[in-house]
Image 1 (cartoon, rainbow, N blue to C red):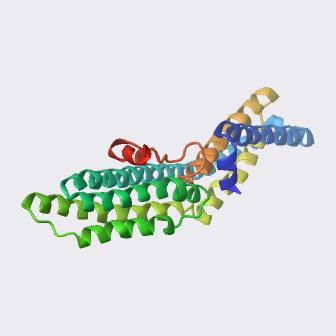
Image 2: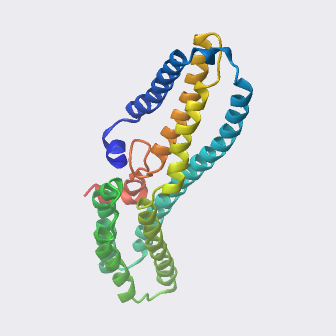
Image 3: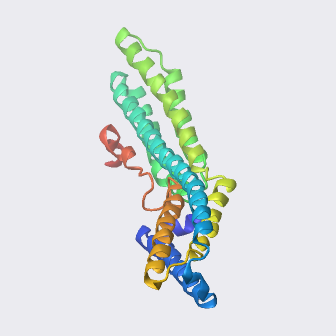
Length: 263
């Protein structure tokens, strides 16, 4: 369900629903509770409620900060993995220029098939949370077989051959890391802490009585808006390959790899 929302609903709409919905529900709950218990406006229990809010707020804030920083770091790391994989693939394409025409043609064919499979097959699967090695496995194997069958004849060819093999091994490792990240999500316990904490903290703000209703509603709405926006970040950042803020496959179309998309 979360993947479908990220892939089919704009981030602006999600923000309006999550943040706006949280604020509306919080304000409505505060008004209803105040009407049912008018004595809350006197603030008789503000000392106790204030201490409880401070304690819960501090704990919940630390949890949310940890979750958001972790997810942002994961997104940044995923972008680095994708860029590194595309860069190593491009370097192999450049190294291939030093090889004889038959070897160069076979390697170019394997690399072209690989980048097309990554962008056109693997990326949609990763967006849907169903990463698979199958689409690129044959092309990567073909590149390895081409290099394994080639025997460099000159010192110049040996240098480029060693570099190409190293870069190809790096591509294989980065592909695995990319697919592993695509299948991960926030652990259920952290999801429960992030979203369950909001269910506990927001209603506590209803109990903090203020004589002027507008001021109390502003207080409740501010807390709910901040929590709603934080939960939106958790929701959006949890899947690095889904939604408008997802990692882009653009690096596989740029630089030395652009030649494989103009044919």
